[in-house]
Length: 180
Ligand SMILES: CC(C)(COP(=O)(O)OP(=O)(O)OC[C@H]1O[C@@H](n2cnc3c(N)ncnc32)[C@H](O)[C@@H]1OP(=O)(O)O)[C@@H](O)C(=O)NCCC(=O)NCCS
View (cartoon, rainbow, N blue to C red):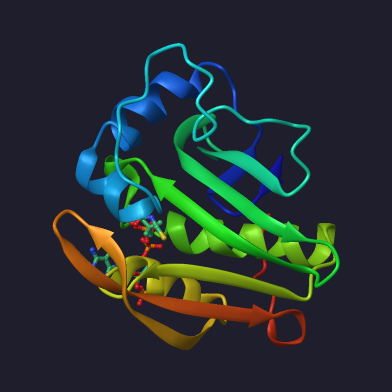
């Protein structure tokens, strides 16, 4: 378990899957904004890679985000595209609707940076998000991520092309938040 102040990142449990499916992946708009591909339903009980963690997959580490008090599930987070040659990776996350806007996203970014830079020895972490996702942009910037560029009209989302922003953080620029 990786701990922040209020939230922690632990392994994906079987019981988490129906909650994440119902609250995040069955939401067509949320899914279309968060995933690179088109929304399609996930069959209950299927081993869909968006929900089920594969411990043997070296380049992708999936976490469930929990409130430390009570071990209540509040979302999902991942370090993906881990490249051990260039020592880089990407961050992804999604919080359940009732858990947004409470500072948890900011903490999840900080904890994923700790995992990436300290545990995995990475040099660079990257985030791609839609340019109108103010909460994601701000959560990233709070950990020191800087905007590196805009990918114009790069994402087809619910009938229109939207811009994505690329943010990056280098190990030497990272200032760890005090946690735990
Ligand atoms: C994006 C997300 C992870 C952010 O986490 P969060 O817990 O909601 O964000 P926080 O509460 O930590 O807020 C971070 C900052 O954004 C601001 N913010 C939060 N929600 C906001 C909103 N809807 N509009 C504008 N600003 C917002 C907060 O005020 C805070 O700013 P501050 O640091 O200046 O105080 C979360 O909202 C989420 O899961 N959204 C849906 C899925 C998604 O977009 N995933 C990312 C795909 S790349």
